[in-house]
Length: 129
Image (tube, rainbow, N blue to C red; front, side, top):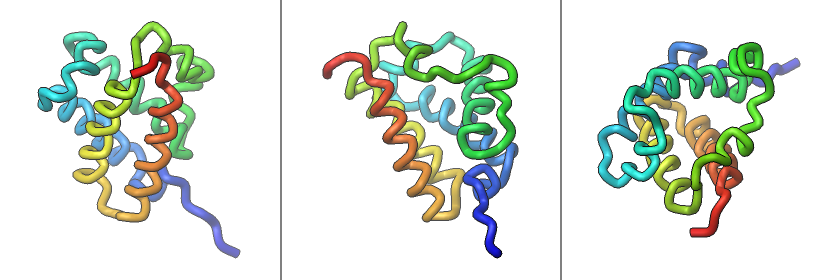
């Protein structure tokens, strides 16, 4: 009998998910080409970091921290107040893929997560362009 490990387990649990989220927002803060999505966030990113960490924890198969605190994620609905087109999607993915490259050593896991993030990011688009 084999048991599949979740992405949460494969990445290394809460500590590594947190590291991914922290690096994601550091990259967003550092890259001039991601200013478009950075300006959608509050000046201080702690609240966004906390929510993304809680969401990713459950999304990757770990504890459902976000659901327990905020209810169903309703990702698309929560993002509707923001204009999200191809540029914003691509900026978000640039940050996440760079963070994945730096934080996740397992190439197969990195690729799986990158593909999954691309699907979610594409689904968040709510405008052309």
